[in-house]
Length: 396
Image (tube, rainbow, N blue to C red):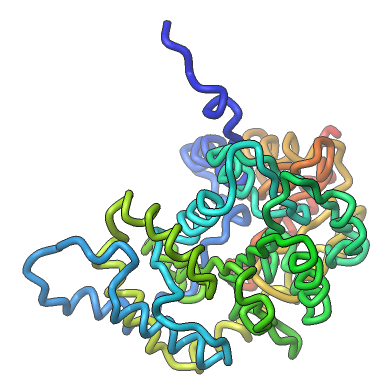
């Protein structure tokens, strides 16, 4: 019988999606499932983006340029300029989602066996992208007790070897919602310049910063011109997850030229989705103001509800739309499966993402879950109520 690859067998399952069969089975039993497991916003996609596709007059759905259309990249550059980020169209390659941008980045800067340092917990698919690229993830632990702030820079320094090629951060963070400060970014800037490493910043949640805090991009620091690689996407910013349009951004010309070869190998990003994404850039600031206010209210509602549950602790996020909660259970994955498969409260249940899958270090996050506050406030309140009753009933 033919053998599968070691790489394929090592590919991790998604902690966000692995419990989907249990959720589907619960629904077939007639149960309502509140989905707190996935960052799929319920915010409406801007009308201007949807109209651009509906009103398109193209006769042939043709390939675009491998780097994305010049018109779209020019408008992306203008978006960055509006945030005081000095980016030109030639610094941008449009990708099929932020996922492909990360794959292009890893493919451009690493060889099999190389290492990337990532503060954990981190977006679970970083493990998958690293495995697909033959790269070793080297985790540096950030702590629940201080809301997952940047670990001491000395901890990064200890992990750097001749195989280290980059430090990767998500800012604001998925799954933690932590927003790195300018001071923390400056510390990372110092260490990558000292050791000639790349600093990859996944900034797809840039617009979601709360409590008067401001996002600080690695593109702000001109001294990082040759070191910084930004991963971006329309998925969360415009509630356009299904468009699958992202981009890789860097002022390092050699990096962009190398990434372009990967882009040429897959031909081009989706044409209709680029049309929608280009139009989305005309979305007024009022849209983001309203969305930010909505997510702030949802965060406050969820965190307050979770803090009232005996034995539950929650790290308060300042960005994105996720939080990590510690539950009074030994195995959060078993609990997440049980609450779908065996439990309901008035024929309703919830789906959460076990947080162990967001760590690379074995044994970490065993009693933690990631919760996405992408539902309306009354649904979040109800979900927290179900969680409270489920924890009382769970045979831990």
